[in-house]
Length: 273
Image (cartoon, rainbow, N blue to C red):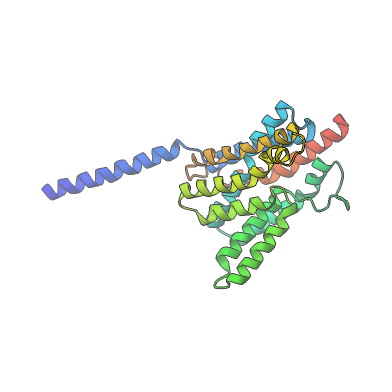
């Protein structure tokens, strides 16, 4: 009887622990909820870029909020590589939507169709695609370190002219390397972010040290990058669940991204002039 009672208590403790874990997960943010936040933030960021004047308060607010989008999407590329049922289809999907978004991206932010002056401007889906390729190089090329380093370096070079530049690929690699330990992911993210934003934020100080006149617009134009610390707070609330909408919701970003770029570009062309 004593043994049965002990087993019963152990089973109850395990059950209670599982229920506490489930409740904690339910209280967090699902993947689809985080992606929805990212989509809203991206829209505000692009409204600022297309319609507002750099340096004005609303521009800074919208662009600060807009720093949420990229890192959240980079995180879920690292997650998606391990959770997808077919990594080849995942890779193809990113490649296709990077291509679909190519013209709308240039049209929205350059005000024209691709030409000799802007054809090298690539969108953030292209950055996600390169990041996924970097993960495939890391995990799927076995025992060939020089080749892995060379291919990863090539992908970083290709990302230099895309939205979020090389830092997007580095974020994806870091999230993957530290996967399973969010504290390490958060530390790695913060270190990469500091390395990325400090040159712009310390620009005015360097100007003063070299005898150049202080230009407050240089600092103001970069202060919104401090918003890059917001995503890691949101990601700390990720509960590991897909959330409402299921797998169908994943298409919302792919469809919304080129569509909203095209709409913003048309509004700017025909309404604002």
